[in-house]
Length: 198
Image 1 (cartoon, rainbow, N blue to C red):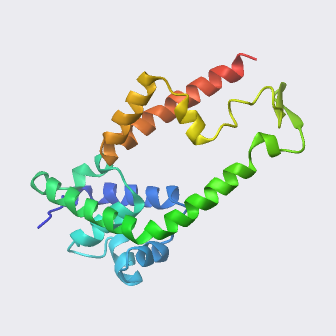
Image 2: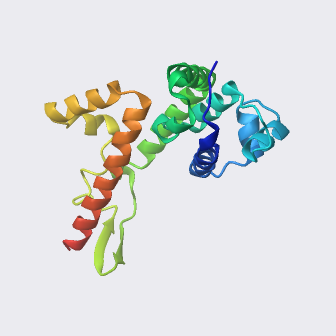
């Protein structure tokens, strides 16, 4: 049985609400339908009107919203951490199984969309001035690197970069989320420094 630390329920619910916004501004009703629980059950839980916490419902919320476990680890009692992780993994795997056929369709749609964005098929060229910086769009000479397909970009990686990518993919979900969070900060830094170089 999974035990929760009731002192951290406010923190946990705050994280859930944050990820409901991050995942497209989900309402309580949409979240309840997504994890197959009653709307009133979800409302009572999110408004702290329940005395007992349903571990399966909490794990399915965490799995559906893809909440990194390091953000809610204080809410889970130490002796229940491994059990809770397994429960979340179970719900994530069942989610992937249900969405498998949808993913295949969306992948083919993404491939055709990516092909439609290919620079060679772009008919018009335009540009914009953003904060005094001239930015061309559809210009074959300047943007050849940025319009490569994902496969082409992966083929251009150095062995060192491929090794990093392999290590990244071997991490668990929390590890990958942590690397992504750090990486986003670095990307922002490099983009800002590049914009100030003009």
